[in-house]
Image: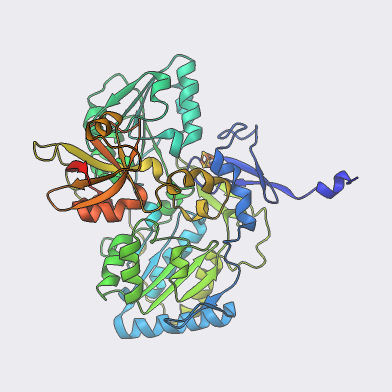
Length: 523
Ligand code: SF4
């Protein structure tokens, strides 16, 4: 018989490390539990939240410092000796090419204080190039709280598949519907819950903001990065800025990243531009803190990393980015950190470490040590200014007689290749539902379009725009609107390049998939 006390592990509360909703999780070693007292989760977690404890013991944890010479495998090394060497190499690169030859990629998986340290590190090195691929779609905007959903009489969900990306928000919206609020989903893809509330307003990709602004009765707008990822950040920020609106951040501390000033200065390069400049030989060193440029842009990241003189990656879990680095330092999970996270409505929230990180160096510790080592030669740049929005992004295509279908990203697949999802069993199992059958990608087709083409799931189709074409297996998806096709996030770079859809949106300075007019046929 086993004594009850043998099961008594340490139990403590932290924040779910996944989406920006901000549920609290009670961690007991590798097990995560929801808290009824948590005002966000209210006794429930989604599948990602349930998997939060698995991260502590994931076989993909980075537990040791590793270094390599180019072409050789990574080998263990002392953390302090490695940091001394990194500081020396940064100093040498800066002396040869200037501070602007070094770039820094930050993360929404670290605390506000750690993001501030990265901003300080950029200033110390003398580089204006600081950004993150996890800033995608998050812009400076006033935001109502999640609690406002409970009081709203009319709710308009714009371009957001809540079930896939913000399940706790979906729950609140369904509860609002049950108490009599009118709920409508507007988008090019029929969100999973639209049929439950009976209100789906279809529009073409890129047409969400004008359609939403034409609606006058809705008193609360919920929107996500879906619009920005299609080049509509400018119209959305302007249009929803004067209405009661909630922007739903994709990642846990995405707002903290912005509030800490971890974004490019006007004279700095954005995350995507850093990769482009590195591939062109203009950037010489890249310091990556819990970011994964290989997640969405594997081909560009591979070219960039091959051209860089030095790539240093600090992360809690192994990714394709750590595999391609010259130096890998162990990061820490949020559960192993204390600090501040910024919530959906911009309010700070303090977290305490609930698990030991004795083997971890941690992103903040790495940044602080590099600051100490480089301190004697600091080049002070001006502090962070407010994020300045640029001009609007590229306009979406409209269907034509030759290209009658619109191709857009299927952002419900946003989490499928995320570093933390890949490091768990539970969340990965959910994502694997797509990847198992289609390891090299797919294209989502509406049911009637698939019938017209006489294509079933798994059959090959060719998508062609005026810029080029590519062939992918079809996945018939009842949520895809006929007359459109959905490109999963894992194919963003490949399909975007082939179809001429991959572009830089000058408004938020992020890569986007411009909705493209295409034709689709059997390959
Ligand atoms: S809704 Fe978001 S914050 Fe809440 S458990 Fe799921 S992934 Fe975590």
